[in-house]
Length: 159
Image (cartoon, rainbow, N blue to C red; front, side, top):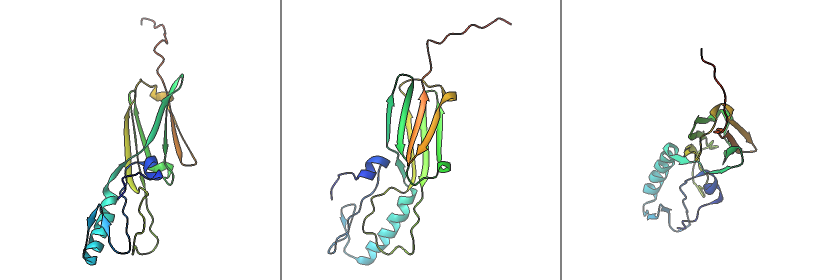
């Protein structure tokens, strides 16, 4: 079985890939001779994969005034994405639901990631959490995290 990641796996994080051919059934490189055993394991693996937490793939870079984080979140409602910020850390959590139409009888390919995902990133610089923004357009989540201006000064009065 190939260890090459699919395009969607690169975008969304870890997945399990299963290849089924006409003569032999393989699950995680194990040969199963008994068809009933295969069907039972297949059903269990399907339900177990719903409990797994995938790691969301991201791009993170800095421009002159902010740290920008981008992630593909296609097929996820905005209300199903939670973003938690601190001055030096970002956590993105969510869930992508799979709606199977009809009774699942056979899986030919299973490459998309369904279920819960999360990603926690330690930021290389402190950000101003009050000015942070999040936008989603066409399945692309963009976080704009303005950097703290360490040169900013102010005067305070003694009370």
